[in-house]
Amino acid sequence: MRRWSLAGQMLVLQLLVVAVTAAGGAVLALVQAHDLLTDEARATATAVAVSVAASPDVLEALEEENPTQRLQPYAERVRAATGVDFITIMRPDGTRYTHPNPAEIGRRFLGHTERALRGETFTETYTGTLGASERAVTPVMAGGRVRALVSAGITVQRISARLRDQLAWGGLIVALALGLGAAGTALVTARLRRQTHGLGPVELARIHEHHDAVLHTVREGLLLIGRDGTLTLCNDAARLLLGLPADAEGRNVHDLGLTGMLAGDEERIHLAGDRVLAVNSAASRLGTVVTVRDHTELQALTGQLDAERGFADSLRSAAHEAANRLHTVITLVELGRTEQAVALGTAELRAAQELTDRVVGAVREPVLAALLLGKSAEAAERGAELVISQDSELGDLGLDARELVTIVGNLIDNAIDAAGRIEVHLSADEHGVLIRMADDGPGLTDTDAFEKGWTTKGDGHGLGLALVGQAVRRLDGTIEVAGSVFTVRLPLPERTR
Image (tube, rainbow, N blue to C red; front, side, top):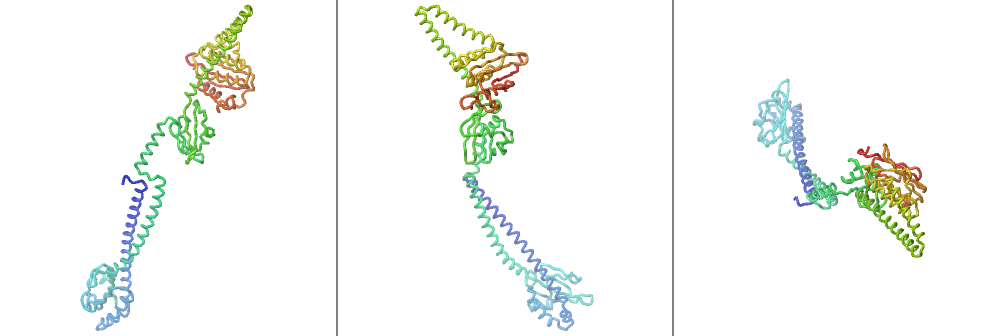
């Protein structure tokens, strides 16, 4: 039976329950019916015996020389009219005056009479000449003394016959109950089979174990959202990545702040705290399935790669410009204009050296200095001007170089896209590090850009400013925007204070 489907096992078990319940009900009904019929027989016998004992005809017949002559026909008429099996009128010593079988008249009554002789009416079950019967015995009182006794009764055989008639109806009712129970059980089983796809308990337990293992061990976050917006499933990774509470399941996604993350069907980037998440969603029969992957480290590596690519592009641009200028100098020499060639080469060398000296002198953090030199060449190539303010001075304070590259690099990139001139100020004092970026562009119009992941590139959607906001938060700093001026303040590391 263990190999059966869950629906099959439920069918058998429910049929057994219905059968046992019906059988138990039938037995209980049979016992109650027997008790009721017995009580009814005793009540009928008592009523008949008391009525006969109180009849004036009985008292008059007892005064005659042969009471049986009047009492026997009277007792038989009453017996036929009331439906009892016997009415026996007897002397106080038990000698019968009447009996359904005339041969028993004059013989002793079989039964107990002691309580009746004391003036009581009582009932008992006793086996007499007609077999076992439920009988009542009562006294006939005259002048304050017992003149005779009356006994009326119904045989157990007759009670059993009536019980068998009721048992037949009871059996029919039980059969109907079993049929209805079986039909209802079959309907429930069919529904259960559809819902469980005909699987057995072992298969269902295995599926649950696999489901539970996958949900709790997979590194990607998994969400299942119902059609009404209720979060019906959330694994451990999703709770960790999205910072969801333990009671998130069963709550609406709007209350959990996930509405913005679910907008759209394509893969998109979502920012949750200091994490960069890749979100995918797909419609299913149960609602919407959402997968969440952590791209924080990947995004950081991508940022570093972009910085390195920027350095390479800057070197390429510088090499290209140097080649052009060298070709010009060589041509001037070939034309015999050596003085002009020397002047051009000296001017270019002086300009490049001045830029390098100004950047390296103002910024002693090597990675940040290299970034600024690269961005200066990139800005020049794209028709913009990147200027380091005269009062800039920033030493190597031990701040995370990757975070500084993310902050400064993305701010410069957004400024280059929107402006022609960018001025960068970098300094530090006892309060912390100050990074100020100002340009002649239109400025930031969306105050939520640091949360939504928007930039000024292309159609206005990206990650630049959002990554800046994350990096600032990771360094416990603040960022302020006033038009086209961005001001970042970062606390100093403990070891440099």
